[in-house]
Amino acid sequence: MVNDKQNLIMIVDDNPTNAKVLFEFLQASGFRVLVAKSGESALEKLQVVSPDLILLDVMMPGIDGFETCRRLKENKATQDIPVIFMTALSDVVDKVKGLTLGAVDYITKPFQPEDVRARINLHLKLCQLNQKLEQRAAELTATVEQLKQSQQRLVQSEKMSSLGQLVAGIAHEINNPTSFVQGNLTYAQKYMQDLIDHIHLYKNQASATEIAQHAAKIDFEYLLKDFPHILHSMQEGIERIGDISNSLRTFARADNMVKIPFNIHDGIDSTILILKHRLKASNTHPAIEIIRDYDDLPEVECFPGQLNQVFMNLLTNAIDALEESNVGRSYKEIIANPNFIKIKTKLNEDENNILIMIKDNGLGIPEEIKSQIFDHLFTTKVVGKGTGLGLAITQQIIVEKHGGSIEVNSIPGEGAEFVITLPIDDEFR
Ligand SMILES: Nc1ncnc2c1ncn2[C@@H]1O[C@H](COP(=O)(O)OP(=O)(O)OP(=O)(O)O)[C@@H](O)[C@H]1O
Ligand SMILES: [Mg+2]
Image (cartoon, rainbow, N blue to C red):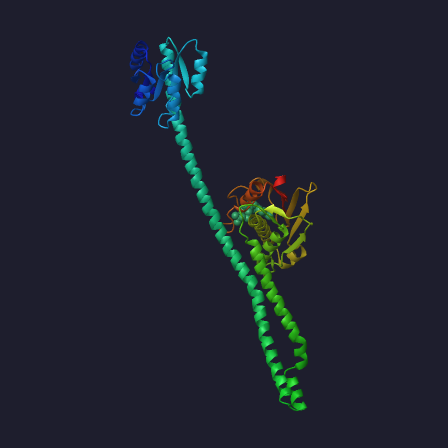
């Protein structure tokens, strides 16, 4: 029962007879009742009391019921109190006007006691339900917020761990040409010293025999041939370090607030270079072949850093799938049926979109999990290897941030192919 809790009802009516009849009836029904003789008096009382429901007469001297209702709804403290208008039976216009002002219902004079009680109880109940709903909604919003925060923490820690792996990979990539330059530098220094010594012999007008003996000692003929090679190799090593540094810059471009034109091939190439350490031959598998089939594409208006993250996620997944497919296969078997990742880009026939296809010949995706791979936290990888966020983030970047789409084709056992459609600029989104 609603009136178990002794709800407080406020009657606002200038007619003492009406007010009295209602007062006695409501009190007898178990409500606490408060009467105000005018709109002004009601507004004044409402500054100190907070009834559960208001019965409001329309026709009153001073401010009428409509104006009283308007002011009630304007005030934060009173706007949620349900208001029921009391009108004469024939006043259809009044009834409608009352409802548009925010009243929840009307009762008609002369009153039918059971009707009045039923309506009051109904609206008190609705009001209670509404409060509960609002409370639940607030709880839900708080839960969603908490979830969002823990998801962000997860993404962050995921980013940090893959960042760690990347940094290690890049360090390795830089180490190679560095040690190669260093090794050659030792030879270059030795050759240089031999040459200087040789020139000194000429300068000091040494004998022809002495000069010939020294030439033989330093293997002069070989030095003349090899020295330029060594310098050339050193130059290559340094260029390689320069390439890595450029790719890092392309890969790690901070995203602006607005989209900018970007050559997506640069994004894909820099991502491949950063992943080079995972593509190279190791003692468990031969190199993974990267097959590029690039179309002549216009620049795409996008957030380059985010698209690079997409390429990173898809290429990492392809490498993981290939590594998994190598388990139990010998080096020889893999060479006979080598691992590859094919990256094809194409301008769509409508010329409004570009297509990016990333295909591997790993184990593919079993039909029964195909519908789940884009879900948050869905992973088939062991703990520590995958968090199941890569494709969810990828989808979000492609669909929500760029108005594109991403699909997957896979024949289990033969590999997987991800196809991205990306609008060239906002005009086509
Ligand atoms: N190229 C692929 N070949 C086979 N399965 C794939 C491929 N790409 C994704 N999958 C499947 O989809 C799942 C979800 O991929 P997703 O990138 O979202 O997460 P993850 O790689 O497991 O972890 P994370 O990317 O967060 O490190 C993977 O666990 C894998 O089962
Ligand atoms: Mg992944």
